[in-house]
Length: 293
Image (tube, rainbow, N blue to C red; front, top):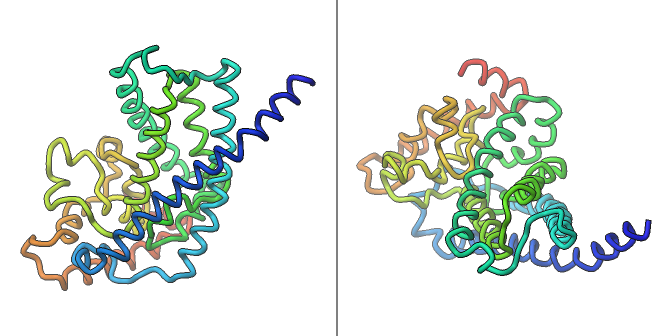
């Protein structure tokens, strides 16, 4: 009982600092992407805007509200990781020389790759299992996403995503700086992936190696379509499992300037996919489209 009380006291002392860090990461990550892309360079990037319409302000406030709850859940799990490492349950270290720089860099890369696999399969299950769809549907209320959509989860989904970190650290020792790099990458890639503007170069999706990294259009089409493009950072799971949208590469060409295609095609294509995606917004619609795959 005394040990439990001691751990609870540690939690109360650490949690506010972890919360502040997680909140700062969300506000800086999503906020900077929003400021740069939606405000400062909006005119320059107009030809790269993926959708013809702009989400209403009310959607953004709803996304921020859900995201603040997500931040609290992430902070709770993050605090648990900190306490677990203090008591030798989880493998988090602070001295780089303990494993060396090559290990630190390699462990961050490995964590990103493994999270991508975790996300793909959990994400795909969320579109197939009714109870999981109910928690995932909150994120899909943002049919036309914004940078603030990155953390706009139901609490249940936020917890599912947050649990990846302690499970990974229970197996693979991670430096605190490596965990910071991982979470910073996760936040930035999520904000960019939901930003609504194609930021990658023309022809990126057709490149043999670089094309394995998902473009902004990849996840935007997931919000727009029934079950396709489940991957987070990379293309290989979607290609291996046959869940890449068949028009993904063609759509990326429409979203990058200098491709010789008239801008009118973009609006026509958006109208077509909008009709398809609205038909698949319910769980039954998602299942029907999955059955046709």
